[in-house]
Amino acid sequence: MDLTLGLDAARAADPARYAIGRARPRAAVRPATREEAIVAILAVGRDGLGVVPWGGGVGLAGSAAPARYDVALDVTGLDRVIEYDPADLTITAECGLTLEALREKLAAHGQDLPLEGALPSRATLGGALAANSAGPRRLRYGGPRDRILGARFLLAEGRIARTGGRVVKNVAGHAVHRLLCGSHGGLAVLIEASSRRGSMRDAIGLAVEAARRSAAAGARTILTLDPALDLTPLFAYRRLAADLAAASLSIPLVLLDRPNVRGVDEILGTAGALGGLLCQGIGDAIHVETQAAENARRLGFNILQAARVRMTKTEFISCPSCGRTLFDLETTTAEIKARTAHLKGLKIAVMGCIVNGPGEMADADFGYVGWGDDKIALFVGKEMVEKDIPTRDAADRLVQLIQKAGRWIDPGTGS
Image 1 (tube, rainbow, N blue to C red):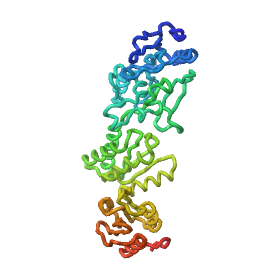
Image 2 (cartoon, rainbow, N blue to C red):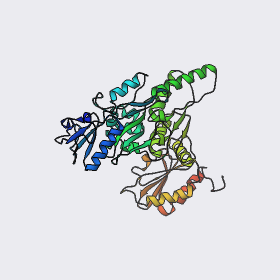
Image 3 (cartoon, rainbow, N blue to C red):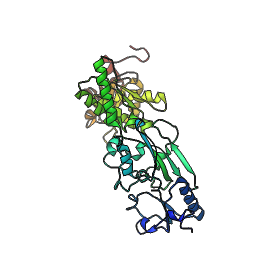
Image 4 (cartoon, rainbow, N blue to C red):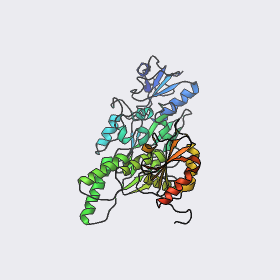
């Protein structure tokens, strides 16, 4: 085995510095360029050796020893800033750059990148991404996998691959760069990464200033925030609403979300962010962008209905059922839905038992609640109006109750 893996002798390092637990590599190299890293990886593959990528070693200190550990590949020699455009809010750097050096580069322009790690003077960009490490600011800005836009990484066959890009909205396809976050170098060696900085305060400051100037000019204005500039709309719009109120500015807010740009689930991520804001009374309209326009439209209306902002269909509320439920809850709910789904804006609860049912009906207009063995009780709001109804007759009686209350519309007639 060539202890320099085909590199200049100056690239060899002391293997004792790269111990993981009781395991120590037979060789350690510190390439200064990507080309040298490729040469080292090709030599590792040719000799069938086990390699562990190293940054500052901060995350590896407490790690379990790998099953095979022949070579330590120190990437701290790859520490250049490739591209940095402060106005575009993105930076691309080689993964051997320390977090401290990265922060100093950004701080010169009054900016910050909320990547956190122990010992920032040693911890590297690649190490923070590979470990997906984060501290308290993760709650506001998300973790490394949320901030990474793209990456270049070295594969075992000595080929450098690319995923993602250097700007926020640039490519389609699988976000392999996010998969590498938390992989601890087990999939590939991170060589270069692009990330967006935390800019919520700047974006909000600009929005408030724009609103102030617009109000002074007597212009009509609406405001929205691009979710690509922050990890979640929830915190940003709360802060924006508070700052606008403090400045005595009454400006309509359009709650915009692009879940695919943020890297969150289209349904859960968007509902949690926009629904939470609407329930707090923040926002005058919502705009959701997903891969399919029809999905975005459906999701938007569902969020508005769940927040009770705009009702566009019948709302059905049901309990999860338990041992006290003495009728087939699933079949009954489906039957009631089939007969009443055309009643736009009506809220109907189907509850398994009288013990918890009334309390779980929320703001239902009408309730269908298990009363006993083969017996049903009907509610209008929170008031029980009928009981001891045989199950076979209960759906008909519910329809009659809705008709009596003047809330019934014949299907297909609109009256």
